[in-house]
Amino acid sequence: MTETIAYISSSLKDIYPKSEISSMTRLIMERICGIPPHIYFFCKEKILSEQEKERIRMIVEHLKQSEPLQYILGVADFYSLEFEVNPHVLIPRPETEELVEQVIIDHEKQQGKILDIGTGSGCIAIALGKHLKNAELFAMDISKEALNTARRNAKRNGVTVTFIHTDILSPAKAEADIPFLFDTIVSNPPYIKESEKRDMEDNVLKYEPHSALFVPDKDPLLFYRHIAKFGKKKLKRNGRLYFEINAQCGNATVDMLRNEGYKNIELLQDLSGKDRIVKAQL
Image (cartoon, rainbow, N blue to C red):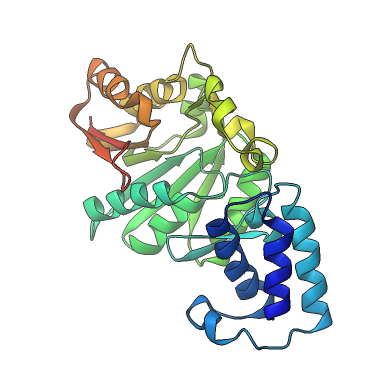
């Protein structure tokens, strides 16, 4: 195993930072060789099979092309759950775990309907369903492929979610396709401005779905505005709205929600100190 670890490191040293190579190596060893991270350092003398070595060689070749490891492995961890991921859905991010955590804190032991808009892999809705046993979960997306992935993830994690295919940017259609009133709406919609592409890594730009990432520079609140207007029709009185946001657009998002008539608006920072979550009440 020591030889294989050295091979991974030498093959990727000119492409990835040392710390990232180290974390990827531990994940590869866990997924391919069944070595949990907490015993990784005690297993370096383990002899790998030829099949394991070949699978690792194939993974390294994909990594050299900047393909995300989660797509190569086909799975990603999120909120202590395992999700299938593929190029039709975004890879779940740690910041989104903080969004989920906020919703769970505010809804513990409460009943009601929760809608996840732009569900992608289903990670938000499924994580909420796993922890909010009294809630009824709904999730929507414009991508049929994403919804198929989300359905498999709900089954994988033993969570019941009602998935709906519709387009939040087509208000009449979304309102007709989702004939329910909700206690809570949560969303991590596209929020990266087109001009921010120049600062992004190839593993995101080349492989993750751009439709789930980017918005026009001239209208960075495109999805938030539509969701806020949708919420005014589909949220119950005093219903709550939760957004993950672009750190550059925190105050603008707050102002938009205030102008739309929402109250008790809060702008929250993530663990890095960046504006990341906005929550509000109708």
